[in-house]
Image 1 (cartoon, rainbow, N blue to C red):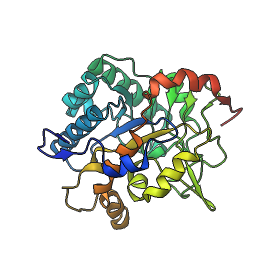
Image 2: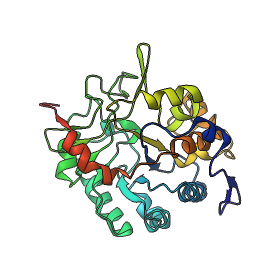
Image 3: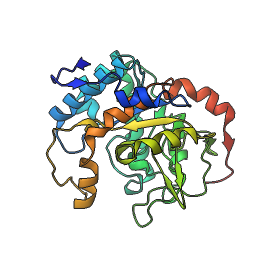
Image 4: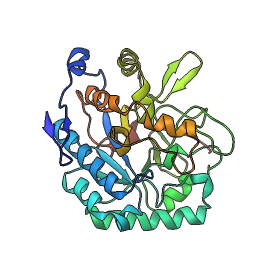
Length: 295
């Protein structure tokens, strides 16, 4: 057990993790660093807990960071960088891609990349779209990423979970790493097939809700999919009271709030076989990638 700066205990290795053993595939960890509406003080406390957990499990993660935090909370970004974690971009603001024009996205990505590089002392080369919103509505995004200096992306969910004006997923794209015509490498979200459904089981609220036996089975069945997991700082915040989140329905807000007490245990199971951060795996993924002809 370790004690965080928020004076809370975190298990370094749970009994369940010991029983289930090491995952068959090494898992890369990532954090989507954004303020979900709880405020910067809450974000800082949750970031401290995540830093403690990463250190106790000997995990070097990729931190996908919203660029505006470089202005409002630069100390949080510096702490992750000083702890040895890779810094990548999660957009200038946490806004779905279809809500931006190509020019707006390009300007924001360039500014965010420069700001995050200055704060971290790293070359920021990776991008993850807020809410994995690289979808058929935004096929122009890979070209903008290349123009803004990004080399790789982790923004596509290669299935369709929801349609409409704010779709989730892009059915028909490869489940393995692939190259956009722009040359940007795409590292898709890992999926678990359950009957006719494909579930993004290794991150966020999906990981919190997935039964443990199914999690173990899912990792075994990954095949050639890239093995990586993600979380948000709020995913481990068991003390936050329920509230309606900005722009979210009551059901969506409840889904994002519930089952947070399960997250650390599931992360710890996956951490039994940690892989390097995204940037260290990109060269091999690029060698293995297929190239799609159009987008």
